[in-house]
Amino acid sequence: MSFTLQIADRAPDFRLPATDGKTYALDDFAADPVLVIFFTCNHCPYVIGSDESTRRTVEKFAPRGVRFVAINSNSPNTYAEDDFPHMVQRMREEKFPWVYLHDATQDIARAFGALRTPHFYVFDRARRLIYTGRAVDNPRQAERAKTHDLERALEEHLAGKTISSPVTNPVGCNVKWEGHDAHWMPADACDLV
Image (cartoon, rainbow, N blue to C red; front, top):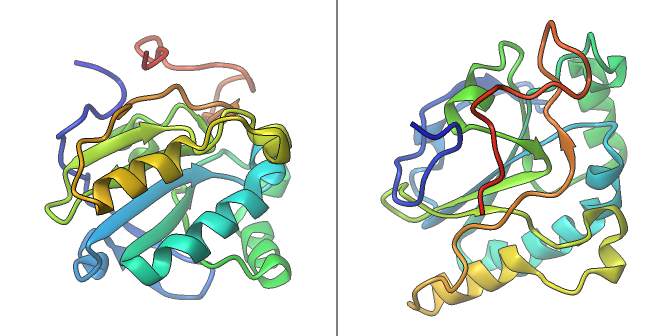
């Protein structure tokens, strides 16, 4: 079995606290035709370098029925700034247009097979995976990106087309797993393509 969700796999359920004071489960987004779940954090230079690019993507696709949900699964014991209070502070300062959830146990990161920050998963109305990987090919300097894989996948899906590249390798820092050094990855975690 692959570490990371495979195309056509169903979205794993979750129930996680958010920076807005609410708790969200997968069913809370049932009305949204397309759901993008992405693993992110507060400190990673690849996340910080692509936050504004991700914001533009959200603003472009939200009016078309695409909902974006961010999850931080990083251990604060590896990077203290990835803790929940810093998540709340970051959302207050940046006013990102997505829900920001905290996966303190890392169970949801394992269920999805999150490899890096950022790592994107796109689910159709039936909550089957239709795209996984990166948003852009250069998230650390998103303004220099040559490919916009997430936007291409969303455009193709919304146009009723088959997604031309449903799997790409996420580019970023690895998820910071509790009890391991900062660069550790699970043995069965590997490149997607």
